[in-house]
Every structure is written in structure tokens, then in C-alpha cells.
Image (cartoon, rainbow, N blue to C red; front, side, top):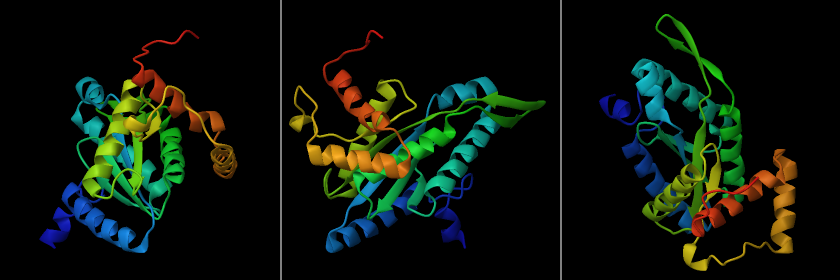
Length: 223
């Protein structure tokens, strides 16, 4: 019973970091043998320190639980979920391709993108809490869990650096060119995914522009 308790985060009920890393190693070996994709979403609550500083840690805990409930409702049946750090979550998606994982992460982000009421001392507080995320997968972004986690975190940092409340897909910097282009097959696949998931193609393509802004250090774009 004590071991089972250590495997779960008390606040969210998700796997602990240690238990998640163990599960990841097992799934990585399995996916390698079976030759299937294994995708990862790294997700973080935006401006969480400000929530704690302005409203106190009890309300901060309520925010974490609210985000966890949203992740569970959207991705609970598809992946292995962990509270990886204070306000960071990891979602491991066996057999799911990177594009599909991006769409799943985007659904979670969109579900959080509205004001909610949270219990606080003396009543309730209405807050708009957003999340940012990064998506990576093996074998495209590496075969070891450490490599894929690093790539997902890099994509998450890019999402934070380009405005937050968005999802970015990992990229290989040494393969990046001065233009971002897609083949006809890739565009057809994008259109199909957009139709199936009910998410605009512009949303799916947005992260490509963000990549260029970061790569060429463009900090402001005239609207």
C-alpha cells in the first residue's frame, strides 16, 4: 500500500514522476520491439507563480486540480499521465503519431482557454488559466525516453517564449531551412486531420511560423 501511494501524486491522482519514468521505459522498449510510434506531450500551466503569489497556495492547488481534471477528461483514455513537477504534466501516448498528439494537446489547451471560478477564502475567484505544451515522439525525435522528454521540453519552452497559451511541435534545428514548406501529401494529411478533429488548419500551421520567429530572433510582428 505504501508503494502504491508513492506511485501516485496526492493532489491529482496522476502517476508520480518516478512511476511515470518507469512506465515510460517499459513503453519505450515495447514500442521499439513493435515498431510503433510513442509520442509525448509536455504541458505546463502559464504564469502559475503569479497565481500562487496573488491568491495563495490553496487556490494554486485548486488550479492544478482543475487542469488535471481537464487533461483527464480529454486524454485519460489515450495515454499515461503524470504530474511531472509543480505545475508540469507529462502525457505519454503509445501508438500515437506526432500530429495526432499535437491535436490532442490542442484540445486540452482549448478546453482550458476560458475563465473559471475557483474556491478561495471568503468566496470564489474567477481566473483565466491557460496552458502551454510541447510535443515530441520516438523514433523521430530520439529513441530513448530522455531524448524525447528533452525535445518535448524544448518545444514547450518555445511555446512559452512565443506568447504562451499554445502548443508547439518539436523540430530538428540542424534540418531547419530559411523557408518552411510542406509537401502536397503533408498538406493533404493536415487537412484531413483538421477535418476529423474540428480544428482549423491555421491553428495547426501556427507553430511553424513561431519556429521561424524564434530561429531568426524576430520579437515583434506588425499586425
